[in-house]
Image (cartoon, rainbow, N blue to C red):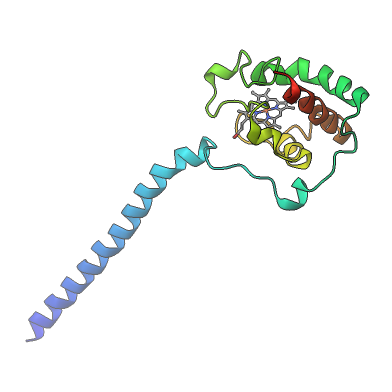
Length: 151
Ligand code: HEC
C-alpha cells in the first residue's frame, strides 16, 4: 500500500514533468517558426495613430521637395531607386524589399505615417531621426509625394 502510493506519486511527478516539457517545447517550436517572419519585418508595419495624424508643414511646397530630392539622391535612392519604386541597386539583397512609393497602399498613407516610419525605421530601413532634422525628414516626405504622381 505504502509502496504503491509512493509509486503513483512518482508517476504523477513524471507526468507533470512531461506536461511542462511539452508546453515549453511546443512554445519553442511556435516561437522558432514565427520569429524569422517577425524579424524579417513581414508583419504589417503601422505608425501609431497620433503619429499618423501629424500634418506635413511643407506639404506641396516645391522648395521643400527640391531639398528633399537632394537628400533622397544621396542615400534613399540606393534602396528605393531613382523613381521610388523600391528598385535601387541595394534592393536585390533585401527582404523585405524597400518600399515602392508608387503603390496605392503607400500613396494612400498619410504624410505623418511615412514621416514616422522614416524617423523610427525597421530592419534594413534605418531610423533616420538621428541623421536628419525634422524639417529635412518632412522635406523627404514632400519629395516622395512628387514621385507618386509620376508614371
Ligand atoms: C538600406 C536600404 C534602405 C535605405 C538606404 C532607405 N530605405 Fe526606406 N525602406 C527600406 C526597406 C527595406 C523598407 C521596408 C521596411 C519594412 O517594411 O520592414 C523601407 C521603407 C521605407 C518607408 C515606409 C514605407 C511604408 O509606408 O511602408 C519610407 C517612408 C522610407 N523607407 C523612406 C526612406 C527614405 C526617405 C530614405 C532616405 C533617407 C530611405 N527610406 C532609405 C530600405 C531602405
